[in-house]
Image 1: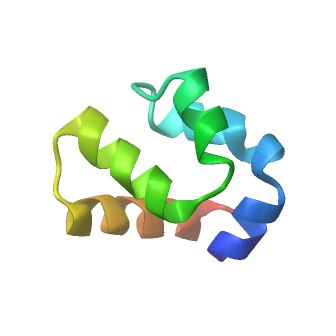
Image 2: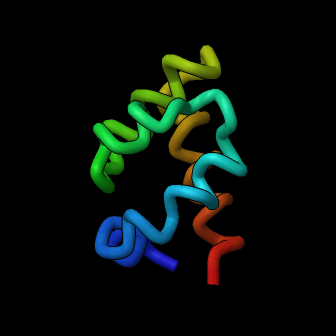
Length: 66
């Protein structure tokens, strides 16, 4: 799955995002509105990881989405 599909169906993926990244609040997820850069930034902030690791985590998660 690519990010465009996630962005286009953001409301449907909110629950899956909460399951994977439980430290993100509803407000965090709502503010992102499907923007991948903001999503990466929030994961960096909440989990204390660098940008490359955040990207890898998101890419790996995308591979599990069908």
